[in-house]
Image (tube, rainbow, N blue to C red; front, side, top):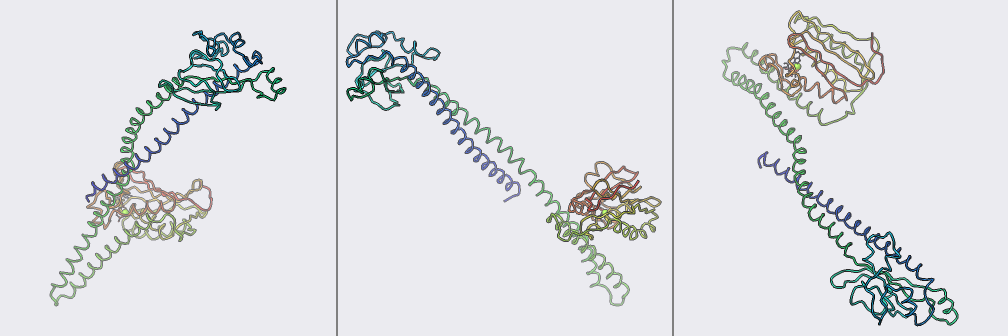
Length: 460
Ligand code: ATP
Ligand code: MG
């Protein structure tokens, strides 16, 4: 599979899974919200019915007759109700009287039963086809003429009845009050919520699909970039390895073809072979070092290293090279020792790469100053030169592997363009960092920041 195809395929899979997971989460939360909304509406409706039934019960109870034949008394105390077997007044207002403050009072109806469960009276707006006998379940839901109704039944007591019941051992209740209502507004509200969900869900899902496609691109971008960098690195490494190898092979061929009578040529050629071999070996060592630095975040080999000793050793090491190049190499090291936790050989490599660059890219008569200071809990090693300098655009690229500002010139000097990449990797590996400030033609200042283990004050 081609790289671009592979990445497109991975992006597609990522977007698909993201959309799927988001879709499932949204569906579950949408369904949960729908259920809780419906349930809370239902509960509110039931508690309203309970409170109306309670009010009616309290108002009716003192007026209830004790008689076994209460029809005439009921007609007197509840004139708006229709009595079973008698002509009906079709203008109900009883509930309105007892439920002042409740919004839609015409939606309710009431029915009164005696204690044997026989219907005595009812509101004229009750649903048709209702049974004349009592179903004593407290809550009932039923459908009449394609409209749903909900009904609540409570027991009615009368003071006289209590007395009589106790006297005669009869049922202590007077009868039953049934309060019912149409579920039309409730069902309309449920339908409205369903409509919102049916229209809203595909819209949200579409948005999730689009955003997951966009997010998957964001997620894939760094992987793609790093993949491209790896590819570039492999190509660069192959290119860098090819030149010394080609020259090595050419030298071997020349040795094989040479006249046995010229021994001095052989020595020269073997020297060339050694030089090329060493260059190859150094390059491979550098590549391996870079890989190992990136792979591990912290090394067990870390130990306390004195930066004062490290810098002065390196100054001594480079002083001969600086003298040959006619460069003034100056060291500024404080008396108090500054310690950092690290791998000594790597720290040597870090500082020596920067001093080597400073000496290499400074023309004769110039100056290189290496100073060591501390600021708060950080050790600062500054390598300042008066060399050729680096333009602002180049400054952002010099830390890339194999990057050289002037490739031809650097290659002639034996540089591979890995020096600063290694230096930066070592600084990161020691929880530090490396910065550059430079001006073309004026000079450069490289600063290494490393966390110190011993706190010391900055020299004045
Ligand atoms: P290597 O260090 O691997 O032998 P190199 O010196 O060319 O090769 P780096 O040390 O990574 O590679 O430096 C990258 C580039 O940055 C160099 O080619 C050089 O152009 C520029 N550079 C680095 N240090 C300085 C400096 N002190 N002054 C001016 N240019 C510099
Ligand atoms: Mg270098």
